[in-house]
Image (cartoon, rainbow, N blue to C red; front, side, top):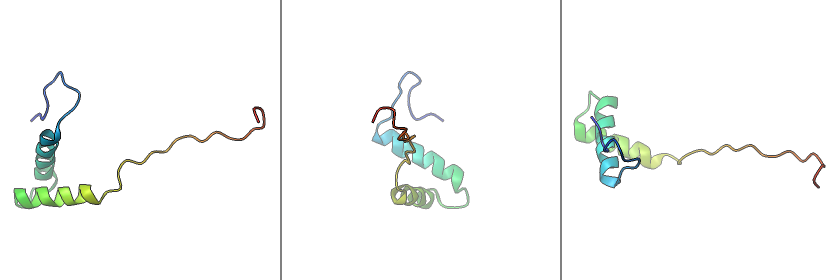
Length: 64
């Protein structure tokens, strides 16, 4: 089941909601589909967003 057309690289908000519904049905098969969707949405809303770990340059004294 696809949410976006093959040629596109992004999805809109409605596509994101549809993807969450599909994922909720797969992740919580024992729950009612609407309850599973709300559980997954709550989990996404409570997350802190993407984690960015970048490499910090060391102070070697060459360019200081």
